[in-house]
Image (cartoon, rainbow, N blue to C red):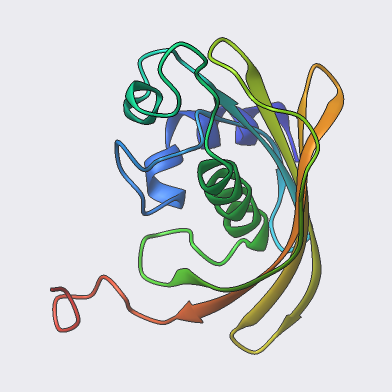
Length: 155
């Protein structure tokens, strides 16, 4: 993939990921080969809404938010979410492991590899890093829902 394509994806991230603030957990797509892999970045800010209560005086990024960031990275790697018509819905998480806490100011890097795509089911493995140290990992199953955002199926 050329650097121009990477730059276009960074600029148009909301064309690839259906989530919006405060649930968009990807700030940059560093690398992407659709259907193969993606490397994404989340800048963990002290202003994230969950830090108000998790935990006062010792803010730690909730594991569920790390899992969501990794799942969004897997969706980006799948190559199936572009154009906002088809959406990958999280169906399963396996082998979830948290190794180190993530704090405000950290830069969370998620590396996702597509293990298998069969019809509308995608299996991916994702590892999250801070400063090149593994902080979390998980295996995901995403199910593609076609035309999720068409006018007929919109809520």
